Length: 305
Image (cartoon, rainbow, N blue to C red):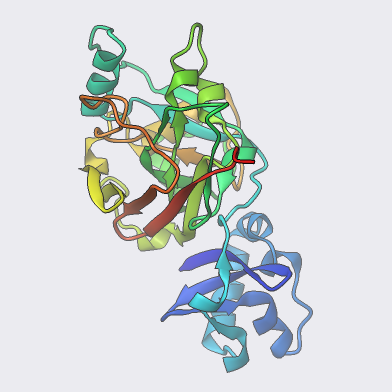
């Protein structure tokens, strides 16, 4: 099932994407004579609802009134979770080639991490799958790209065993961990600031439920800038796979429904190229994960005037 958050006019709702349409779950319930509960109107409430919410959505799809379906091109898709409850958990240097290119680019010895390198992005960085990316040269002139597989937690847990970890996944999405390299690589440890610029975490275009992804370690990731391929790899090359990431995080904190984990990016980022490449106003970034979908975001100068 592909679950999306969308805006139709002034109202924001959730729906199921299929056959070029989006089925408005709240409207489908209303048309069957029911008062739609919150779990059919809000993505976080839907995820909280777990198997019950998924079952209700499937039942509505089976008896769906035609009036509940809207052409996908007539609505605005937002980030599936427009405002997460927590910061986005992120894995740094989780692909060997990317770890090597990053360390070389900052003049450090190449040494692969023996333990997952975790940081976070602020909730205000989350942006829509087709939304503009704000660029402000007064803040950063070294905006870089990073396509990633995003994992959405569906069942809470602490001390989750690796072999049980995937049972805690609600679904998967596409994420671009846009990064201000001049801030990230400034004196001290500035990863949080460099990763947390407003609007610099496009997410979506929807969440594909876990039952539709047979193996999250067999997905191809690609990223293009202005049509030119910059990143191309598969999740099988992660140093720490999805199950290990979940087990590692849950050792120190409780993972909760709706938590988002960005699992790291492969090689091909801009700052590690020779010469380095960075994004500029007018650039279009297309980030894709096989079996899920793609993002398309334009960089827009917000400092003018």
